[in-house]
Length: 325
Ligand code: ASP
Image 1 (cartoon, rainbow, N blue to C red):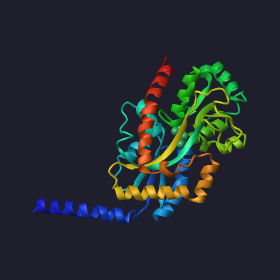
Image 2: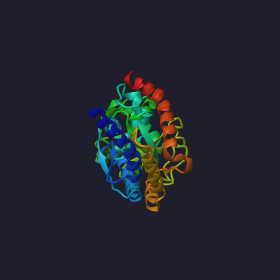
Image 3: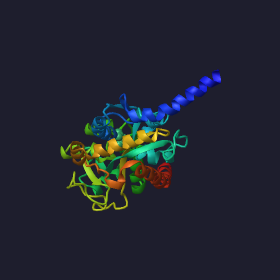
Image 4: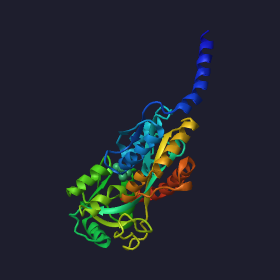
């Protein structure tokens, strides 16, 4: 009898699966943001979650679960029930850089997720506090070399975008600064505004407003071309540091095992959100690069994750070794 009951329960689950996926979502969806509120990942998550909620017909609630360069929140997301009610906003750090820096990382970025799609590309900017006595990139480099470990370098935790692109910059310049970790670059930027930290390398969406307001000093953007959002900011190449070209990205993931019908609904809602006129304008104004056509969706994101892990692992291992010497 017990066996039969178990078999019946199994069958019910089997048939309920597709039906549940079809009706999905019948309750609010939680999107884990693995950093503090107010920073780039949080900004992008809120920007896309609002139109996604409209297309899904259910609210997406943002939950900030910060710690360990974003890996705490992503670990929680990877271990959540794969039913579409917990998704997460990862990025180049959590799904590209982290494996090089966390030997005991509890998830495999390429194998433990159902990728939903890239939400935004985010060029990296080298930015400093107004207290840094430099007006351009070469001035900043000269100052940083002179300061050595007296320069305070903000980042969002080991393996985050700001940390990995920061150690790369430092190792290229042959400098070792004092690293100051935060739960996200939102709070890091706040401390930079008050001059408590000197510099960082961060995602453009965090910075455009404060750069335009003259509240921080932007030294260069690490992309081959200038950003339309900051047309006066030179590229690293123009400013004489052509070897430093790095861009980040944010992307939505669900836990591995999420039913395909739900993954497809989420991908479709994300793609529609990226076509929403309001969201597009805000992303453009913040300097984000909106993925188009074949750059969207699950397959493109899976490919990106695999290539980013392969690209960052050797580079970061080398940069970390240089920082330890
Ligand atoms: N931009 C951050 C990073 O450095 C994180 C954040 O979004 O706050 O990874």
